[in-house]
Length: 168
Picture 1 (tube, rainbow, N blue to C red):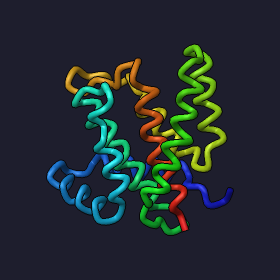
Picture 2 (cartoon, rainbow, N blue to C red):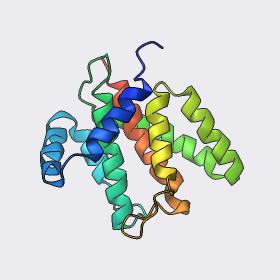
Picture 3 (tube, rainbow, N blue to C red):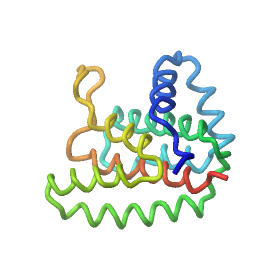
Picture 4 (tube, helix red, strand yellow):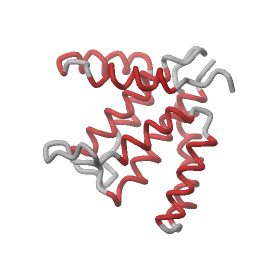
């Protein structure tokens, strides 16, 4: 597909988001509330999951970056409907059940295949690399715990898939 978002745009967008001053965060959340309320609700709806507050924050932040990346698409990003979000949830929960029974090696190879075969492989790669990142481990910014990375991945993939399904 020629209208995929290139890696350079993914990198530029997450770097720009990383440099956004903390006092601008509420403006971004308000903008997302206006443009993508279903995605915002999906990213905030983590209470039913076993994530700690830091993991919830990290997943929310990654989701915000993914939304900003998808806004860079050559195609116009329309508002995600609840129907499109529900469809993405169903497909991804079915996938989660399939890979949940796999060994860690099978899960890793399944994830690699999902990235390579995804309509937006560079955006998927960003999600996976960010969730798996442990290099800059710092006690104030710990990574997502190993046992919850798959769940975080699926939660973010649902948001990405719903955004992709809403491109004009």
